[in-house]
Image (tube, rainbow over all chains, first blue to last red; front, side):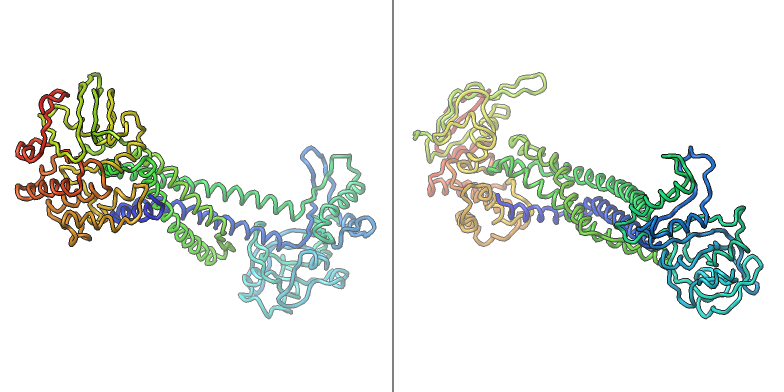
Length: 408
Length: 225
C-alpha cells in the first residue's frame, strides 16, 4: 500500500469521528501552543532586557568600590581616580570618564513633590551614557565651575511635579528645599532592570557635592563610568583601569578593592537569567505536550480495540504487519501534526495577547515567534505522534488474524 | 504442479487455553481438486473452523503439511502467509465483514491495495462487481445495501484477485431463504464460469446438497466423504 493511499485512509478514518479526533488533538494544540507562547515571551523578554542594557550606553564599564569579600577597608573611589583614568597615556583605550555621586531627595514645585534619585554628574556623563534631551541643554563646564543650582529632569519626575514633560526650561524647582533652575528634560528611556531611568534628576557634580549629597571626604564619588573607544577595546580598557586603580589604591596582588563591570557582564548575567527562565517555562509547557501525547496514545489504543475486526479483515485480505503499522501510525502522526499546526496558531495568539497586555502595562516585551520555534514545534509534535502511536500501531499489527476476525 | 489445489497431510492443530491443551485437528488429511465445489460440515467443536483457518492460510498447523496450489505453506512467516492469502484465497464471511465507511467499490478494491500488482485497480474492482450483478451499486455504502447485496459485494471482493480458492464460511447464515438461495446460485455460477475452487463451511444440509462433495468432520478428523 503506498503512502498516498494510507494518508487518504487515515484522513477518512479521522474525519469519520470528528469530535473524538478534535478532543484528542486538543492536548497537542494546548501543549504546542504553550511551548510556542513561552518561547516567544521568553525571547521577547530577553530582547527587551538586552535592549535596555545596550541602551545604558555603548562600550560601558562600571567601576564600584569594593572587591571580593575578603578585602578589608576598601578605599573609596575619588575624583582623583576619575582624572587618572581619563589620562590618555595611562589608559589609551578609554575615551570617556564620568564620575557620579548618587543620592536621593525630594523634588518639589508649587506643592507637588516626589522623592527621586539625584545624580551628581559631569558634562562627560552625556556622551558616556548616550543621553539626549527633549529640550534644553546638558550640564556644562561653566555650571560645574560655578556650582550652579541647575537641574535636568527625567520625564517621570517632570510628569509627577508639573503634570507635563515639555516647556519646562526656565522653571524653578526645589530640591531638598533649595531652588534649582530647570535647564532641560531628559529623553524618555523607559523602565529598566535597574529601576526606571526616567525617575531621576541630574545636577552638576560640584553642586551635588556642596549642597545635596554630602560625603565624609569632599572628592569622594560613588561610581565611575568609563567608556571604551570601541566594543573590541572593552577588555583592554578594563585592564588599563584596573592597573591605574591598583597603583593608586596600593592594593596587594589579587586583592582589588574595586569592581569593574562591563556592559557585557550585565548582558551575560541577564541573558543567562532569561535563558534559564525560557528553558524553565518551555519545559513546563513541554510537559503539557507530553500529556497531549499520552492522550493520543490512549485514543489510538481504544481505536485499535474498536477496529479489531477491521484489522482481522484487512489481514485476511493480505495486509502485512507493515501495512497495518503504517495505517495506525499515519493516523496518530496526522493527529499530532494537525494539533501541532493548530497549536502554532494558538501560541501565536497567546503571544499576541501577552504582547498587548505588556504594552498596555508599559512593560516593553514584544514576544518573538522564531522560525526555529515553529520548526521545533512541528517536528516535535510529529515525533510525539510517532512515539505515542508506535505502541498502539504495533499492537494492531501483531494481532492474530484468526483472533481478530472472531472478535466481537 | 500438483494435481490438487488443496493438499493437507496429517494436519494437527493444538491450542493451549490456560493449562488445557485443546486438540482441534488430530491428523487430518484432505485433498481437493481444482474447480471442485466442496462443503465442509460438522457439529460445533468438531474443528471445522480451525480447518477453514488453516486452509485459508489464516493460521498455521502445529504439525503436518499443507500445500495450497502446490506451495507449501505450513512453515511460512506471517507476512508470507499474508501474501499467499492475498494472491490465492478469497474469503466470504457469514457477517459480510465490509468496511462500513467505504463504498462497495472501495471495499472490493481493498485486497488489490495490498497486492504487489495493484495496477488497474478500479477496472478490476468494477469488473468483479459486475460479475456479481452490482454494477449499479458501485458507489453505495454497506448501510445503503440489503443483506444479499452486501454479501454480493463481499463475494466480489473475494474473487477480485482471481484466487485459487474461495472460502465461504456460512455464507447464507445471515440471510433470508430467498437471498440465501440467490447467493448460493451466484457462488456456484462463479465456480462454473471461472473454475475457482469453492469451499463452503456450513451447518445447513440443504446447502451441502448443492455441492458436488461433502466432507464431514468430527473430533478433528474426516469421518465421511
